[in-house]
Image (tube, rainbow, N blue to C red):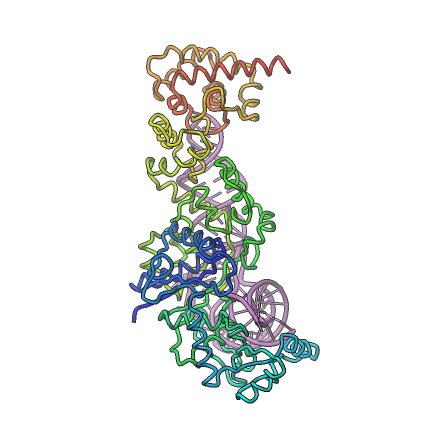
Length: 527
RNA sequence: GGCCCCUUCGUCUAGUGGUCUAGGACUCCGGCCUUUCACGCCGGCAACACGGGUUCGAGUCCCGUAGGGGUCACCA
């Protein structure tokens, strides 16, 4: 039988990177064996607009290249793939459990059960429901109903014996049946609860491997009970560790972003993203713009392969040496038995390192294509980009070499796309390179004369020109180069000086030097 | 608190009784390269939670202890 795995997100409107890792492992396991990966939507409790809350999740998976064989938008032989549309299946299963005596109608009120639980706690005894309001016959049921009671359906769990789970990641794990509660599987209004639904669906969808986060490990006995009572054959279980917060072993949660912002690495990532987002006019709201969520990375120009590669290594390794995996290599090598058992902390810095590595492997024109939308959104080029701007973009990308770590970093080179009278000088750089050195203004003025008349305005020639200039002036290249850079780009850092001049072209360079000189004069006279 | 799980450098990890004076990667710190900022290259710091066993020999097996985490819903 072929392997069938699934990932079952709730439509919450966002895609958590921990969830992606779980989905990835499922996807890998199915795909490497030529099986199927199914997306099922767990919306039994959904009050919200499902399609609106689901779209970002689907888009996220598509962006990551994690595709599904069956599920929303693609359909499949077991439709529907939404739990909200499968209620009848669950009700039928509940009925069957009732008939076989594996479940019972319970007429207790919430208050009565709570009272029992609290009493048990007070006496430091383990709580097990007394089944006082259990109705196993029609007469009993009628009697309770005569009191005006409503019933839910509860599982009639075994009160002795041991449940053994052979987990593909953790090995054999045992639970005493007696400690399992008689969980409610169907509410008074007829709607059903998660544990019943998930077991029924896994069976209906012919899921062979349930790969999910460890927090479900302790739920597994009751699910096994349901499955066995229904006569289902059991899937294989694999409980993988969850993704933990940076700097702790707590589960990574999107709601705790304020706390994570105290972590310097997390904060750095967030801020570099936020600065991109602000410039492209995107709302920076922690509920959606958050390094815990996949959208964050897509929005600021990460490569999906980098994120996936990082996530693969969060809790799995091949040999402790190999770190780069193409999709093919992942499919070739992935295996559940090399999944690590302990939780792994999310390390923003290492993720960024993967992104940098991947980005450096992208060719110039592909990189330019990735960067282009950021310039458009920031209003630095026309929409759509015109021919000249595109050519400038390509030159900038080429010259910047490995300085663009994520596509949004193109905005660091904004001054190449701004008009001469629009771009601004970085305060610190201006002071250090122009204001402070006595000679800067003079040298700039002198060198400008040469720039105005040199025949070829290309990097190599300009370099020679500058060296000649240095000799006649008796200065070192650094004395003029740094001032020149600030004058024409406004920035203290950036790619090669001569490339910068060439990209801008003669006219713009001369303009900018004039502007810098007059700015310098203004500041000197004010001082 | 009960139950279950986990525990190697700051972080991700390799390690399945001798080849471990514990390997790789990220970060960090030096140095080289250099017109800035980066990249790159070279080098460095840094870990077997603790205590008992078993064994000729333990990071590796067993038992305890400690710490961390998960879970105990008419949420998923």
